[in-house]
Length: 293
Image 1 (cartoon, rainbow, N blue to C red):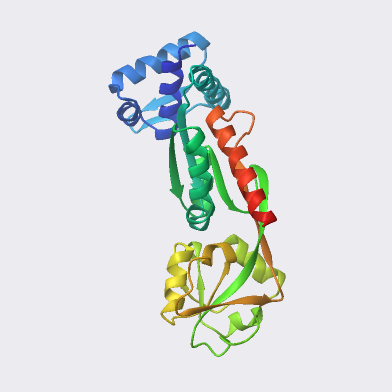
Image 2: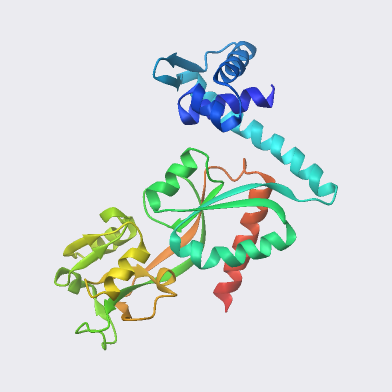
């Protein structure tokens, strides 16, 4: 199979139209249509349904999507290996991550990786849980860094346990206490992240039979911490995400103590590109070293 035909098919499935696929690939819409038609003729299967609104993958075509993605990944591996044997390191790598990971672990992991593989172009996409899953589903990301929560329908590589903490304004009545009782979230104005759907936090409340007084919702943790600093309420976050926030707020251990597991999510480790597999090994090694300090 010609890789151009495969890429045209995958991009059309992802974007839902030949026009959008053409803009991404640098072709004309008729050229993309012809490439897909040629692939369908070669395979003897109808891959896409055409309409005035765009294209949708057929039931038969959906079965080819993971195989074609694997085919393209292997082609990429061939060129990356050839480059390495010529003394070069090239490729593209896309990483989706919680903002907390993107601002703490990833910079050092990327620095180490780029010292060895300077020719690899890296894109980092910050997002909350639904966005990371979307990037994986659309194959925009090679991997995602996030905290574990059920349901988990992807391959999971655990990396580190992080403590959950309460973050309160510096004038809060419990600011000088040794811990923050989780039940106090029913009395304090609570600031919830992930548009009010933070899976890790909601599971934490469920386990402890706490019904929080949710006053505000935010997109991500930095926004919630900024609101805490302004005295608008309290929030619960993982220790990693509050690492660089120390002014006009107080971090307290939870009572009872709670932790979350951070790790890497993948659609398929077997089908990762060489660049992605190498980065994965660097990430696991770095975070393992951090845990031993």
